[in-house]
Image (cartoon, rainbow, N blue to C red; front, side):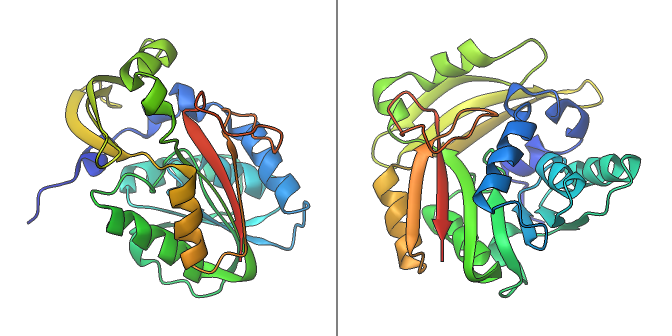
Length: 255
């Protein structure tokens, strides 16, 4: 049996504490933006890729949309199902690998927020497979909205210092960061406390992308409109031009 990847270990038994993380607090504002982008059309079907504990899926379902949420982590999906049941909301949560989704032209929109899947994979090819799979799932004229790590940020800033400045007690911590200029990958030691109080230490690496790379990847998949903005937690806006100060970028693309 193959050894579990760091992101699989990270999200085991972590649903409760995941929802307390700083980066998980912007759900309402992010869903406001998503609704605006889709003209609040309640007939649309959403696919939430790397849905985690279902925070965006559940909020969109509460607003009247039909949503399918997929994730690799059974632990996070269990938490998502529990939350949806408590709110008496219907969301189709499914465990699957984002690179191999079975959907074919089924959804009007796909969201992939807070690095839920892309760009955690070990290779650029594996990350690209996620974009391919998401694109296959969309109907003609469909839209994808996702966030990813901004490769311009670590050229001007220390990723480790950024995490230190945004971390709160009880949240995940990141240290020993080394950013590789040849691969645009940040290697670090991540420490989290799971829902049983067990401390886990993992060697992680995440891929940062520059805007021109994202544009090229999406063009190669047939997207006709590709727009990139700065991604501010809980306050996505088309007014935010991407800069070197943005840790994440917000991508809106249409087939």
